[in-house]
Image 1: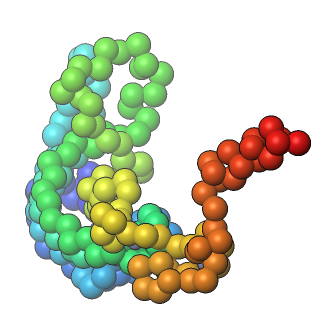
Image 2: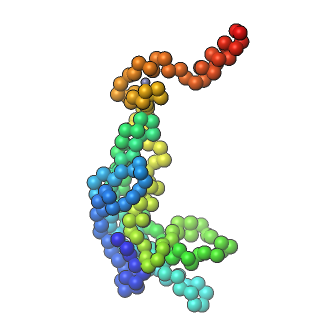
Length: 183
Ligand SMILES: [Zn+2]
Ligand SMILES: [Zn+2]
């Protein structure tokens, strides 16, 4: 859904959208399960700079809720993450701040994003919110045993025969050292 500056110049835009799992590309290992719901509104905020320049910023605020699956960092089994949150963000046209690097950025400006072209794509706002809300590392359980480095079996589900012969690399370094001392 594109929220254009032209639309916002007439009226604030209210949205109540339901995105199917294929509507938004997150990243290859993040899967949306079921519908992502979002509801909110967008307003035009005209930022006056100097005498003539008026910058059309878009403020977008709303709530979202959806379910996601992310692979466990150790065993790669999918782990479900229900997400729910709200956002209140300001987007500025992308070219406006170019070449103005020396302009002091106050702390209140750190939340500013940028939009490209005629307006803001709501799907982009949600992608960003979801990526920011998911934890950096997901484990299916705190004591996940992961995959056997020898045979790739999921050690939470089954034992494998190579496990007993698998030697921790720190120990093998030590036994190398021992054999060198002996010889
Ligand atoms: Zn796991
Ligand atoms: Zn194994």
